[in-house]
Length: 352
Length: 270
Image 1 (tube, each protein chain N blue to C red):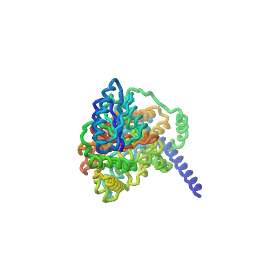
Image 2 (image 1 turned 45 degrees about the vertical axis):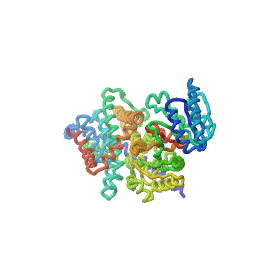
Image 3 (image 1 turned 90 degrees about the horizontal axis):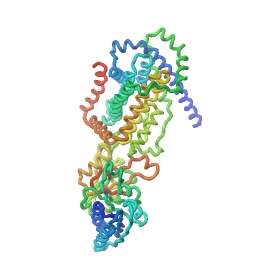
Image 4 (image 1 turned 60 degrees about the vertical axis):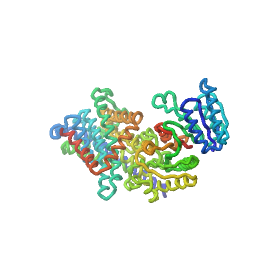
C-alpha cells in the first residue's frame, strides 16, 4: 500500500517537474520575444542606460515578484534580445540576487505583525542580505572587468546547444501568433509570470531531503568546518535551486529551529553560487553564448570571492557579519535604518 | 593521578616543569619526568629532571625519570603511549603565523596524538586558582567537566562552567528566549542547556569542586577567549571535540583554535 502511494507521489513529482520545465521553456521564449519591444521602454521611460540602472531594476523587480530567479532569467532574455548590454545583464542578475532576500525578510515582518519575536523572525532575511550583499560588492567590479575585457570569450554549453535550437523551432508556432496579437511588454510580463509559476512547480517537485542521519546531523550543536558547510550549501542548492529552500532543509536538524551561526554563514555563501544554476540553464536554452558568458562570469566571480573569504579571511568576515547582524537586530531604530537602506539604494541606483 | 612532566631544557618547557611540579604536589600520586635531548644538552636536561625529581620526592611523591633522544613532540607521544599516565604537562613556545606553519607546534602534535588529557603551559602562568571550563553541552563535556573538577578540587581552585550560545533562530517557531537567557534563567526554565548545566554542576560538586555557570552569546571561539581575558582565569579547560575518522574532517577543531588564541595555560581533555 505504502509503495503504491510512494509510486504515485514519484509520478506526481515527475509530472510537476516536466510541466515546470515546459512552462520554463515557454516563458523564456515569451520573454525573449517580448524583450525586443521593451528596449525603447527601458531606455526611454525607465532610463535604464547603464550598469547601475539595470542593477537597481533587477533589485526592485525581484522585490516586486518576491523572487530572484525569474528576474535573472528575464535579464538573460533581455540580453539575448539586445535590450540590455552584457554588463547591464550582469548587474541585473546581481540585483536580482539582492532583491531575492526580501522574501525572507517579508515573511519575517509578517511574523512580527502576528506577534512573533523580532529577532526570530528577521535573522534569516537579514543574514541572507548581508552575505549576498557583501559577496556581490566584491564580485561586481571583478565581473565587470572580466566582461569588459572579454577574458572568457563567448561561452556555450554544447550539450544544450541542440536543445536550444529545437526549443526555438518548437516554440515558433506557439509564440508567433501571440506576438502578432500582443505588444512586446505584454509578452514579457506573461513570460515573467510563467517563469515564476514554473519555479513554484519545481519547488513542489523537489524530493524530500533528509539529513538527520548523516554526519552533519548536529548542525545546531556542533561547529562544522566552514569549507564543509560551504560545499554543502553549494551542493544542496544545486538541487533545490533556491537559497531559502536549501536553508529550510537544514531547519529540521534542530528541534528548536536554531542553527549555529558558524555553520549557517558558509552554507549561505555556498548556496549563493549554485542558486544561479537555473539562470545558466535559461541562458543556454536561449542559445545565446553572450548570455551564458554573463551567467558563468557571475558564478565564477561569486565563487572566487566566497572561496577567498572561506580560505583566507573567514574569521574576520564571520565576526563582521555576526556583529552587523547583532547591531541591526539590537534596536528597532537600527532595523528601520537597515530597511530604509535596502529600499533607497536600488531606487538611487536607477534614478541617480 | 599519575602525571607525565616533559622538558627538553628550553625556557618554555622549564616553565611547564615548574607549573607541573606545583600541580603534581597537589594532585599527583606519582610522577614520570621525561627528559628529551634534542641537541647537545644531555647534561643540562638531566640536571633539570633530577632537580625536579628531588624536589617532588621531598614531598613524598614517587618519581621516575625517563630519558629519550629525538624531537620533543614525537618523544612525548611515544612516552605517553608506552607508560600509562592520567595527565601530560608540556610547554608551548607560542609560535604564530608563518613560523608555526614552517616549524610546527609540538604542543599541537601532542594534543592530537596523546591518548590522555594534556595541559599546555603558555602565556601568563601563575597558581591555578581559577578554571574556565568550556562546555559544549554535549556528552563529551561530561568527561571534561569531571576531570576538571577533580583537578580543581586538588588545587583548591574554583570552576566557572562556560557555554556559548552561537545559535541563530531560523525556523518559524523558534523561540529566541533560550538564545538570550542567562545561565540561571536556563537552569530555571529547564531548557536543554539548563538541564546540562545542572548535571555538570552536580558532577563538579560530587568531585568536591566549587563551581558556577556563565552563558555568553556570540561566536564560540571569540566568546571563549573574551571570557578568559575578562574573567582573569588561570587555566582554560576544553574537551578534544574532534574524534578521529570522518568527523575530524567535518567538525571544526575548536580546542586547537582556543589553544592558539589563549595567552594562558590550556588543558585539553581527551
